[in-house]
Amino acid sequence: MKFSSSIVSTAVLLGAGCSIHAFTTPASSIAPRGPSHATSFSPPSAVFSTTEDKTSSTTLPPDFQAARDQSVAALQSSLPSPSLEGPLVHFMDEYFAALSVAAASGATNPDGSPITARQAAKEMSATLQFGMKYGLGPAKFTFASASHKALRGNPDGADERYSDESFLAMLGPHAQTDFYAAGCNFFRPAMDLRRSLVLGQDHMAEALEQIRNGENVVFLANHQSEADPQVVSCLFETVGPEYGDLAAHVTYVAGHKVTTDPLAIPFSMGRNLLCIHSKKHIDADPETKSAKSAQNMRAMNEMLQMFKSGGCAIWVAPSGGRDRRNVETGKIPIAPFDQKTVDMFRLMGNKSKTPTHFYPMSMVSYDLCPPPDFVEAGVGEQRNVRFTRIGIKIGEEVPNVGGAEKRHLFTERADQEAREGYAELLKGLGMEQYIP
Image (cartoon, rainbow, N blue to C red):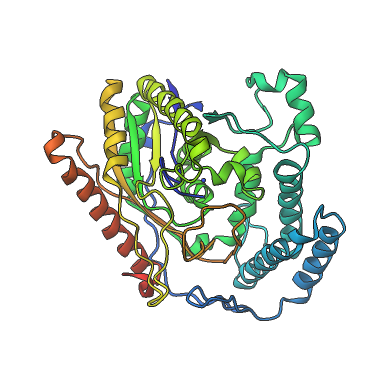
């Protein structure tokens, strides 16, 4: 049976800055992995603090320092504008430091090979090259107004876009690049997957079976990091290949930043997207409000058609944006779920006439790419990267029952279960200091 999945990340109507496959593995073959209990871990060669305004780090090891210096020199020689140097060098410093910590901790790649300075330089070079070409240059990538299909290099020859000469010319030498894999390869080394957690795997199995049966699944999640799509992918992969397939073919409903920010664009090119303007920012420019509203309606209509087709898995952050730390206490509370957003998804599910199931999903990924402490309307925010543990918990299904007079109870329950799962993850990951 055909599997159509669309995981909506970075929130529908959100203020965030992040297909079709056949499943052949029967549900009975899913063997939930009992995750080991994470212990507190301090990086041996660098210490990062997210409770301070500045990142502090020790000197890089010689091999990482040399790779960093060579990468910075190459960047400086190719920058179209000197004003870009500061933020990009900061991003490079963060990434090389994070991967040096990963290497010193003994973390490895999926094939068991060590994380190296050469790897850090290679991934950073590719990311900046993509950003320069598709985010800033004359060949800047333009996303379709309402949706985008991930650019995977067309390995099976089924993507008709790759038969369009103008499309191939626009991609140039990267026409066969798998941008989805590139995004995962960039962030995976910064994830301490050995000490990370995936909880609620019994509920994951239930959701997967429902999807296989042609029903829809909506994950109601908190949202913490620009790298949340990669977090979902890399953690799902650790559970089993069928979940890796699910993650690889999800569709993200994206806020305006992920399709306009130069550094975010290459990562977004590798994701299936429904492009929706955030309700937090749609009123920022009265002259474009009507056009943005029309685009949102087109995206909603496309999502409704996916619901009607069935087998759709949606990941949505009903808060409308990323969780922000409390600068006074250093704690990181979950932003409250917006009832109107949840109501809209329930309405779409009911309108489709296809059974639609709702699962709370708790996510811990803040330290991987800490967001600014305050919401910024524009693009081009400072990027920080940490080597850190991450976690996901899939909660028990919230029954999609009750009329309009009780709809607040549905949202309140989903919100509460996401909070409880979040606290459980933080305790299991040794991050109790972040619990509100």
